[in-house]
Amino acid sequence: MAADNWGDRARIGLFVVGREVVPEAEWWAMRPDGVSVHAARVTAASPWAPWNADRGGATLTPDLARGCRDFAAIAVDVAVLAHSSSSFVGGPGWDEAAVAALAEHLPAGTTATTNGLDIRLALAALGAKRPFLIMPAWMSDGIIAAAVGYYAAFGLAVPHAWRYRPLAKWQAVAPDGLYAAGMATDQETVLLFEQIVAECPPDADSILLAGTGLRCVSIIAALEQALGRPVVTANQASLWHALKVTGVEARRDGYGILLRG
Image (cartoon, rainbow, N blue to C red):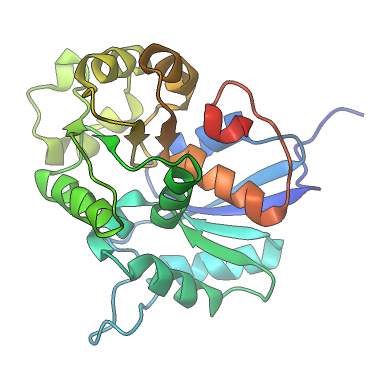
């Protein structure tokens, strides 16, 4: 019989930005056989689970609550809030609050996680403490500053935070206009690779590509070879953590040291 991508080893649910194509494409490229990926699309503003007034917890937006019901119906093993910006805007403590809120809407036995938490665990597993931070072209200065502050709160000193410069036809558009204009589906990975190699500071001990909508997993191995440092990306880190949670042992060549370990 031919393969049908059935999730007989693990079934993973992703909460993704409503108009993005990158997360699902990258997860399907990297995932081992027997692991299936299922998306719930979200249109809410960051953070997707806003803090309660007293910051004693978070409340799911309607899109997240609906996605939890769907994930419960299809019996996912892990539900990933795959949105880096939510963690950055939410700040320290938000990941844990969001996980607790998701757990209230998911069946017992389904693990909830966030991209911010996944990235922090991945960096810790690699012993990385000074990541060169690369962000998508559409990220505002405010989001980038929030990201640097978020990582600093967890003892991660970012020596340089930098934003991908898109193809020339997009460079006259301000960052906050790129997403609406369609640049998110017109990303060039060779250009991204060249820019990262040129911009990487010598005192960075790792490379971190944050933002699940940033197309980049195809260049992880090439970056590690060129720069001699481990590379973590948003989607790679969440897949790595989801596989650990489900106990799926699978060596994935071509997607960096993290998924080879």
